[in-house]
Structure formats: structure tokens, C-alpha cells
Length: 245
Length: 296
Ligand SMILES: Nc1ncnc2c1ncn2[C@@H]1O[C@H](COP(=O)(O)OP(=O)(O)O)[C@@H](O)[C@H]1O
Ligand SMILES: [Mg+2]
Image (cartoon, rainbow over all chains, first blue to last red):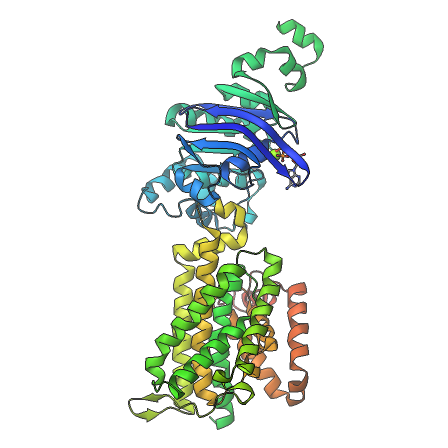
């Protein structure tokens, strides 16, 4: 397993956001964690990235325990996060934002080549190259956040709710891209989403998170066919659920 | 140029150097510091002591002075930069008061009498005063500006900018927050040390009061007024804030009040400073000279 998370517990003061979540991601997989608003999805990704302290449990990456490792060292190990709401560096140009993603890798990656590849994936970023990132639209900022994470050629990409605030057409494009990065480029991705349908459709496997605990897991196709998931997460009404059985 | 103008211009050049250092900390790395005068003072005292007591010349002392100031910056920076942002302001004020108290009460530093008899800088056996000393200070200012420009275009500079914008996002890009805050702090304090040395050999008599908390407020006002994070902002701020009270002598008495007021007004109405993004100056400039950009 590339990533193994055991009995993960994360709290903010008295608020217990995640209690005892177990999950794993194998190399080459696209795995999603679906759950409602407040289920603890962001906390889990931040725990894996090292941005919030883990109260209990372990995070192992490539067989090594990294539970206490600071975030910047996890980034060097090859974990990259596309944060919730993109969090691009507002006053830095699009180009500078991309460079921050390559920080410390100057000698390890062919920078020019990676930039050209990313501009091919996201032509808008080349057009807006010298503009401050804060002048981009929400969708463009999401693309920039993905590109900034991809430039480093990560071993594990964590993606936090990319569909939030995007137009439906763009959501499809972004999910198509994630799927192609996984299937064609072998990128391992852990996706957390409220948009259950879109993420299950591109995932190999998925976990269902409710108030900080994993309540269900399995191949994504099985979850798409599960009546409970259809009712709770796919927004199907009763007749549709029955028709599909 | 008459002697008075040369004196004011020399002070402007020296304060610009120190303000540029503060800009590295505040403008580039986004770490508030209200104690920068402490490092200005450490540079001045180090150079004064090394030349009066240890018998070094200004030139042989200078590398030591810069190293000592940077090292003290490193040692004080390690605990300070680990605290949350809002505590940093208070911690740096504390550093300023402690350093000032050490100068004032420890006999080694001359106590209340300060240190006098600091030799003039000599350059090829010529004692530098008046206009030549102004040129020397301007040459050092040019050097400092070049270092700043180089820094903003380096990977380390980019790492600092990213930290300033969003520390969490920067850390998840592999940028170590502690390392780059410290780097900016050491670079900024080393520049303050250089300014301090130039100040000591210009005044030839220094005392603890020259480096008190109001001086830190003045330095921060220069940076904020000129434009945090810009290249020329601190220098512009120093020109305005050193020369204005000189032009309107009665203002000297209430200088500290003016600096504080100015700081608050700028933060409220022009947070980017005079040379910052979308500032009044930039808009007027682009109207007067369409197609050209105002300096940053
Ligand atoms: N910084 C924080 N301080 C206090 N409570 C928080 C904080 N961040 C998240 N929480 C709480 O933790 C729970 C999980 O939040 P989060 O991980 O953001 O969920 P999700 O991403 O699934 O919406 C929620 O109840 C939320 O209110
Ligand atoms: Mg979330």
C-alpha cells in the first residue's frame, strides 16, 4: 500500500472531527472518500498532509510512518494537496504560483518540460501567466491549484473538493482530467468529495465517511448501485432506486 | 551642497538601508517586526566597540559587525518566529526594550554615557566626512538594493513570498516556514547591522536612546509608507520621514505621534504603500505617463 491510515483521530479542542478512520490507497489507484458537509473529509486530507495535528492513530506512506513529520517534509516525500477552495497565492503571478510547486525540485524535474505539459492541460494558465492569481476566476484558480500540485510529479495527489463552486461543465472537465491523469499517467489520487456521483464514476474504490467515521467501503461501481448510497448521496428518489434494482 | 543638507541626506541613506532590511522581514516574508531598531543598535554598538576598544578599523570590523548582528538575529529569531503572528509584534517590541536596557545598564556598553570617540571611516588614508561619507553611504545603499533585487528573484525569495501569502499552502508545497522566516530575519537584521555601523561612524557618539522603540516605529512607518514588499518603497519612505520633520522644525517634537498616526492612516487607506499595487501614486503616474510603469 502506498498510503495506509490506521485509527486516525483528529480533534479541534473539544470538537472531534475524525474518530478512528481506517483506509488505504494502493499505487496506481484512484480512491475517493465521499461524505456530507462537516463529515471530516478536509480534516482527513489535512491530517495526511501534516497540516493539522493527529490526536491518535498512524499515517504510513510507502511503508514509513509519517504521523509526526512536518508538512513541508511530506511534500518532499511526494505527497501534494490541492486544497479546498484552491488557496493559490493571491498576489503572486500564475507563473510564480506554478514555480512554488516546483520548489526544491529544480534539479530533479525538467522544469520547462513540465510547464509546457501543464500549459497544454490548462491553456488558460499560459494566457494568464503574468497575472496575479487573485484576478483569476474560481474555476481558473482551481486549475492553477491542480497544476501547482502536478508540477512536482507527485507520488500521491490529495484532492479536496475540486468541484466546489465550479460550473457543471467545468466539473466534468476536471473529473475527466483526474481520471486521465490516473489511467494514462499512473498518478495515484485520493479524492474527497461531496459530489458523490462524479467522484464515484471515476474512482476504483471509495469510502463513505459519516461524522468522522468510515461507515462503508467498496468498489466504486458497487457503491453506485447501492440503494443506501443512492438515497443518501446520489439524490435519487425512492421510485428511481427501486427501478434500478 | 551645504553641510546641513549633506547631514540630512546621509541620515536618509543610512535609515534607507535599515528600512530595506526591515522590508525583507515585513514586506517579503510577511513577519511583523516592531523591534528592528534593536538590530540597528547592535550593529552600531558592535562597530563602535570593535573600533574603539579592539582597535580594528571600520573596514576590518564591518564583516564582523554584519556577522554578529545576523547571528543575534538568528538566535533571537528562532524562539520569536515560532510564536503565532500576533505574538510576534509583542515579542519583537520586547526584544527592542531588552536590547536597549542592556546598552543602558551594562557598563561594558558605556551605560548612560554611551560610547564616544568613534573614529571616522578612512578610505585610502583619507578621513571620510561630509560629501564623501554621503557617497559611501549611498554606495552601500545601492549594494543593499541590489541584494534585495537579487533576493526577490531567487528561489528563496519566492519561498518567502509564498509564506507571506499563505503559510499553510506554502508548507504543503514543501517550503519550510521556520527556515525561510529565519532566513529573511537574518538577512534583514544583517542589513540593520550595516546601517548601524554607518550610523556609529557618522555620529561618532552613540547612546542607547538612539535605538529605542520609537525608532522601530519610525522604521516600520517608512516601510509601510513607501510600500511593503516593493524595492524602492523603504527608501522613498525614509526620504519623506527623515526630511519632512527637518523642513518643519516644530514637528520634531511630536515626531513619534506623526509616525504612529501615519502608520495607522496608511494601513487604513493605502495598505500597499505609495509604490504598492493600485496605489494613488501608481494611478497618477500611469495617467501622466501612459504606457510606462512607476518604479516598485
Ligand atoms: N479549525 C477548526 N476548528 C474547529 N472545528 C473545526 C475546524 N475545522 C473543522 N472543524 C469541524 O470538524 C468537523 C469536520 O470538518 P471538515 O473536516 O472540514 O469536514 P468536511 O471537509 O467533510 O466538510 C466539522 O464539524 C467542523 O465544524
Ligand atoms: Mg471540506
